[in-house]
Picture (cartoon, rainbow, N blue to C red):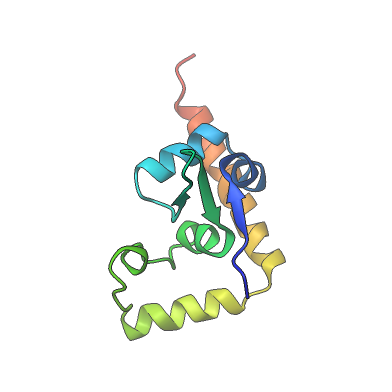
Length: 107
């Protein structure tokens, strides 16, 4: 099965954040990504959702390192959850982050 790749704009719209936030996540190695020859980024949908729910291990992209058994089991359980539930969790997380960021802004 082919992995669906998202642009930073598509990922931002999906998660209700700005494209700049997605770019910041990429630069901080918080989400998996592929850099195209033109310099644009693409994010694998499954990896993006896994990274934001805490089940993605960045080492698997770089060195092919294996996850421990517990992390593998959690990752498998997360992958088996319906996409609608995972997206709902991402939207909830996004609203919480937005609320926290909004309350931290100086008036």
